Length: 259
Image (cartoon, rainbow, N blue to C red; front, side, top):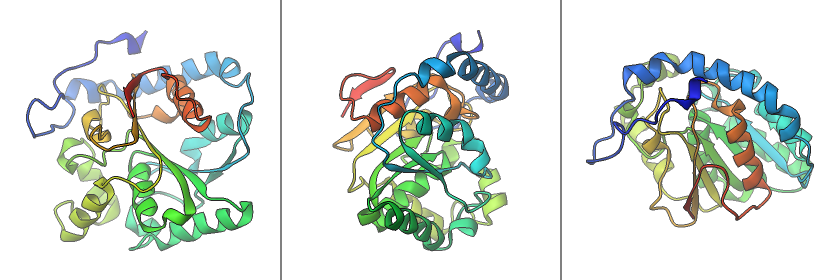
């Protein structure tokens, strides 16, 4: 079974410098993602046998260069257990090219959902989508109920990932530009709404330790065992998201206990 591999300790922050994941982890990203898809199929019915949701609106933000199609299994899971999931309907995630310089297009989407449902919206962001969710929660906390980030490197430098060059290519932004650094600093600040970070230390594309901030008071920290690619359809991740949405304060699978 592919994901019985030992967790690496090479990414642990022994110093203040976070490094990008090593090549051997990046090399097995696709096989691990494929196994995650198989696991989802095997556990699908057990995952959705209980309906515990309260019909709240949940908006899912895709990762870099991805669209709403990448989150179809997550939306299906959330709908099955009783929530009202939405795609972001903005096409491919190309950073600010997609959401607008001040996130205005994404804010408009969230505001429309909030107006339609009469309640603030829970944001679940995958990778870059999670960083965007944090950005919006800072700018328009009145529209946001809570934020769940999944493998989103909001707490570390861009060079602690193996995708920073891809980000520059598709977004048209340089990671060392004043604008990107300013936005990154804003997203790293503790949020004014309830927050959960789901992360994996064996992530092959981003350093897992850059995806969590245990020093943030009130932030829940849940560690999972997963690749970066396909993390949003991993059964353990779906269980963790479901537990957070249900207000489960008991330890979840992989919960580090940081609250």
